[in-house]
Length: 293
Image (cartoon, rainbow, N blue to C red):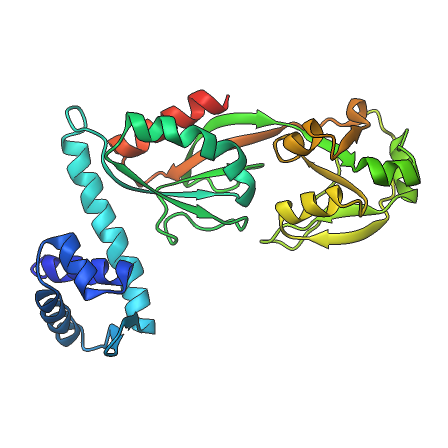
């Protein structure tokens, strides 16, 4: 690839939106970065950046080209890592996709990881939408639920369960549900999946013969907002135990009907099957799976 240096300069400039920062990252001057990108634009016959006196921004064509070029450079980095995997110290940027609420159990683990692997730069991307790992440029993602994408490699990371809960103030006013059928008389706060727009089902044990009618009073597509609505006394909610844990411990929430819920959840570590398990990815997957189980 004759213009690999120009592509590298372009990707670094696209990541930082700065020729100066791209120059620092590649060890050349901002002027040299500008010249490399200009040559690349001439070769391609399209403008990749909109330039002003203060900043640069990617054009639409530039954004599309950046996404492809970044994957090319990632593959080249993986190829180098494959050849020296045995002796190489894990290093480099690791792009990680996580659900929004994952900060509650991931962030406490990161100081130990950073101390053990100081040469790995973590790039955390919190998003509840199900995104394509390759298209999004992610090296690895933490997800829960079913795994419909057979093109991904996976490993179990840790289990969790769901709880029904409400604030003590709400329960003092409306009563504690004694059976699933009692939920029909309560304000139910529902989570809506951002990707599909469907409401999350409330799953009960198999011996519950009649599906309880849920009187939905609020829906939202953000788990943290659901937690806040519940602690502020707006109604009854169904949520993961790791989300409710702190509020339950502090007495801000009270759980009930635990014996009729039978829907254990599972976290997974996922990465593209086409992506070589580089040292930085391997140690991250091993570290997180060992501690989340």
